[in-house]
Image 1 (cartoon, rainbow, N blue to C red):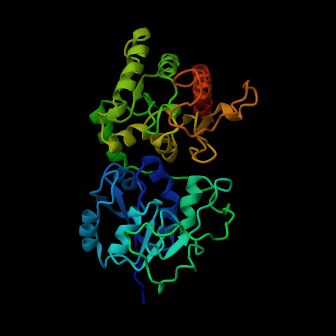
Image 2 (image 1 turned 60 degrees about the vertical axis):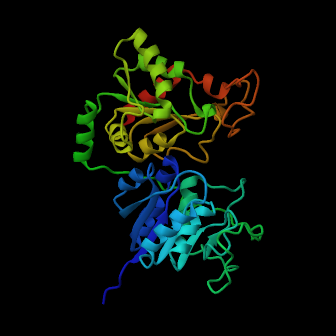
Image 3 (image 1 turned 30 degrees about the vertical axis):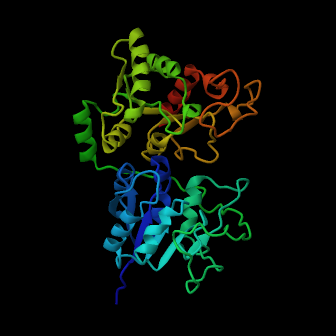
Length: 380
């Protein structure tokens, strides 16, 4: 007698990089026999279509901000009775509403915005001092310890619209090291890559990709002039990828680089679908990026890359790939004076002069990036 697989709904994060970092969790869930459906916002859904273990992707009709209760209720009616368990990956209250409204009996996630009653199985969030890397943070949701004994299934839930009292304190678990070796993987069929390259007029391994943007803010962006200088130093043309909001930044890099070497750079920022951008990254000779979503995409495709960190930390969100190299002046013993301010996790550098000194990024020289990229290319 065969048993039916557990029908699981995964509520995805809203950022591309976070979505990539959930892949090891989904791989573990699928390996233990769960059939995975991922509910994701429109701009994140392509990430999950590059995960073979995902059986179905549902594009959520939600936008940033607001509870959008009417839309969640309507979708919940469509999903009612389809799932046995839901994994709620974001920490927000609104992300936990849909599984409750859809009547999914088991709802797993971390303690977050007063989610008592919304989730049946909750993990205590690790403190900042004990916080694991994000991949391990997500992967812990597949463990049996994800049971909130203070919130048994028979307990009376709060209203899902109530902010409620603060979450009751619980003993602080030491983050498990079990998941530290998990590395996200993405996969695209060769036919899909070939089709995208043809549409973009690109040839496999005949170009580098730069991802000079960072949605979070300028304190994570290596200077445009440095990207342009690096493009002049490389042996192949450079394709710039990013969103439409990053088109002006990419155009600035193109103009500076091409002034010295015509045809050196081409910007595709805002001109590709996310799936096409993934294909362009997967087929590139190498990638240089800031700490961004596309950095995690390159790592998950196993492309040789250099990731440049400034205000954020590679301890928490590193590119998990043997083909990735990180440049972060915070852990460079030869860099003086030391960067006592890093990581600040600020959107903009708060230090003088006006606009911030941004030493953490400006002092990473293009020659150093070119050298690291050459080393990664030589090793594979």
